[in-house]
Each structure stands twice: as C-alpha cells, then as structure tokens.
Image (tube, rainbow, N blue to C red):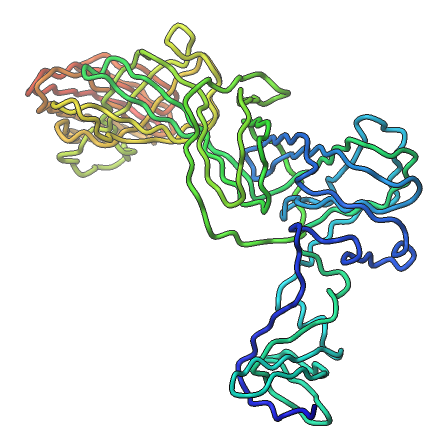
Amino acid sequence: MKAQPFLPSILIISVLFVLTTGTLSADTFKLSDPVAANIASSQTTLDDQTDVAVTIYNNDRALVRDRRKIKLLPGEGTLQFMDVAATIKPETVSLRSMNDPGALKIFEQNYEYDLMSPDKLMEKYVGRSVTLVNKNTELSFFEQPAKLLSVNNGPIYEMEGKIYLGHPGVVVLPEIPEALIAKPTLVWLLGNNGTDHEVEATYLASGIGWRADYVLTVDKDEKSLDLEGWVTLNNQSGATYNNAQLKLVAGEVNIAESEPVIHRKMMAMDMALAGAPPMMEEEAFSEYHLYTLQRRTTIKEKQTKQVSLLSGKDVKINKKYEFRGNMSFYSSRVDAQKNQNADVFLVFQNTEENGLGVPLPAGIMRVYQPDSSGMLQFSGEDRIQHTPRNEEIRLVLGKAFDVVGDRVQRDQSHLGLNTYESEFELSIRNRKEEAIQVDVVEPMPGGDWKILKESHPHTKKDARTAIFTVDVPADGETVVSYRVRVTY
C-alpha cells in the first residue's frame, strides 16, 4: 500500500513490548563485553529473596545484606541481581554463597544503572530504522518504515527520501537497545562448580537515614515526666526492603567521601506509624551504640516510617530559670538592660535510678504539658546530642513570660594600669503565683577577676562565669548586687 502523507503533530512514543513478570528476560539484557555475550545468563529478583537485613547509620549510609536462593548452570555465566538500591555504592559490593562458598568464583562485578525511558530509547535509535504506525482516525491504518535522524527538540524522520517532523501515531522499536535496563541491577561474571546456591549480596547505599525524635509529657506539678523515643526512617534509596531485620547505629562513623555514582531525586513521601513497643534492644558496638528492632519491618521506597525506640516513666525533673547578662566591658560604662525575660530550662538525669539509664541518640525532644483542663499543650523543644547514660539532659524551652529582670551598672572606676572596678545591681521579678529559684549568670572578662562584695554568694562555674542562685518569692522581687575588680 502506498504511503500517505504524514501530518506534523506532537509525537506520541510507544514501545510495544510487554514485561509480563515485571523483570527483564535473559535475552533482553546484553553485556557490553562481546566475549561474555554468549555465555549462560541467570537473573534473580525479589521473588527469590529469603532474607534482608538493613543497618542504618547517622550519616546517610545504610548497609544492606540481601539473601536469595538461585540456580546457576555449571561453568562461566552471568548473574543479574535485580531490585537493588538505586543509590548503591558500587565499590562496596560483595557476593558470597552461604551454602557452598567454594563453588563460586567472581571474575567481574558491574553495576548497571542506565535505565529505560522513552527519551533514552529514542536516543539509542538515532540513525537507525524504526516503524511508524499511523493511529490518526482520519487516515487509513498503515505502517511505514522510517529512519530516525534526530530527537533534539522533537523527532525528525526520513521516509522515502523526504524529511518528516513529528508523526501522528506511535513509534515501534524492533528491540531494546543494548545496555538499557528496566531497573538498577548488579551483574556478576561467575565461575560456578555447583547448581543451587543461597547467595548474600552486601553493599552500602545512600539515600536512607534515620533520626531520633522524643515526646516528653510533663506532669501537672512539673516534678516528673514520661518519655517516648521514636526512630524516624526516611527511605529515598530507590529500593524496598520487605520484612527486614533493622539495626540502627548511633554515633559519628567516619566516611571518606567520593563523588556519587548516581544521584536520583525522590519527591514523593508516605507516612506510616509503627506499632507500640517492645523497645529496640541497645548494645555497645565499637565506639558507637547499636539499636536492634525486636521485630521485622518493611521499609518501602519513598517512605517515611516511625518505629518505637525506647521509653521512660516517672523521670524526675527540675525546671530552672536563668537570667543571663551579656559580656560586660568592665573597663567602660555600659547601658542598663531593662525587662529582660529569663530563659527556661528542663533538667533531668539520664540514670537507671531516674527511669532511664540508656544511651540516647541525637535528636529533638518535644515537651508537652497539661493545661488547667488536662489537655496537653506544646511547651517547647530542644535538640540533644548523642548522650551516654548517667549524663545530664538540659533542654531550653524558651523565655519565661512572667520572670523578668533589670541589670544596671551602679559604679565604674579605673584604679590603675589595666585594673578596673565595676558594681552591678540586678533586679529579678517573679510575677508567677508560686516562688521560684533563678540562676543569675554573669559572664566575666578574660583577665583576672575577683568579686569584692556581694549580696548573695556566687559560684565560680569556670574562668569566665559567676553564678548567683537566688530564691524569688511569688509575685515578688529579689535584688542581687556585686562589686568586681578586673585586671586585664
């Protein structure tokens, strides 16, 4: 049938092949090595998986151990290990047979990640023959062989000596171009003396991380709290880990950075909350701490998931108020500070006697307190670093609305070469209905300093800090004064 003229149109690309199993068949995957192209080829997918374990680190790294049962023909052959992370670190890959380790010998290993897409398929066929199928209902159906000349800013075809821009139908390709695959795949060239194997592939991948989040519920009298720790997992690695053994490493593991092999943007995110405790089991591991989930869990691709980490009940706390002065220039006069709000801290000990006593991974602690009706309200949050057991946790909650103070310099004098005396008065006012205790924190200069007189005893916290701890009555005021001599 004689070809009818083609009308310029927007190209609709369709590749007429069907992947009935969701994986590539052996003859659609071709090694770039022509010597290896004719040897036996086997493939394995998630359908063959017997176990998977994921250990996730703090610094965007995860160690994946993927076990599968496979059958291999004796002699040399290739194994295509599919359904792996798209963010895999190829230099970290290893493979071993669990049941017959002496039977497998690895000659080569490759990571193939040139994935199929309509654009890439068309690019591979520039300069080659394709078939154009007309789907325009206004024209009779026909097929027309053509040569694809270019895909820059749209396809250009040559047909019977004429050049056509675009095509109102579909493009049929005779086969999948060499080296294009449907999903990231590990490929090994193996020497095999056995047949049935349970193999384990191990590799590091990026794009999967975790963080700790804590919910602290303070009781009404502000004397104790309950603590719930959660692990938030974020999987953007390009793979799903079904029914996985999950371990988390808390600590700063050193990584020698290198250029990434592949970078993929993962935009979608799901949210799933895991069930209640049992808590993760914690153990010391090298210079870090390892947390093991006591049940298996599935970590889906492009998913954020939370699982229970730990809990603490009836943890005794102290609420502290701190009025902190800024660094004074004791060699000169300074302006008064008026109506400065005190900082509020929540302090507790991470000890077994206090209902905790476990290493706490770095994360954000969010504090909730009941109002007069018993409804919980958010009252502040702070980030903690990795905190060993038997250490103090000190959280900044914010500024105290009803606790304010003034700081006034009452006197300043120059006594001689680099020696000065200054006198300060601090008025702390508590407009709450209950008495409180306030730490007045006074920064001191870098030189030698000595407090000559004081209204309240001070504690020398360090070489540059003096602290006055004072009681302030309900709806009352306490005045702190001191005179200091400084030699620079």
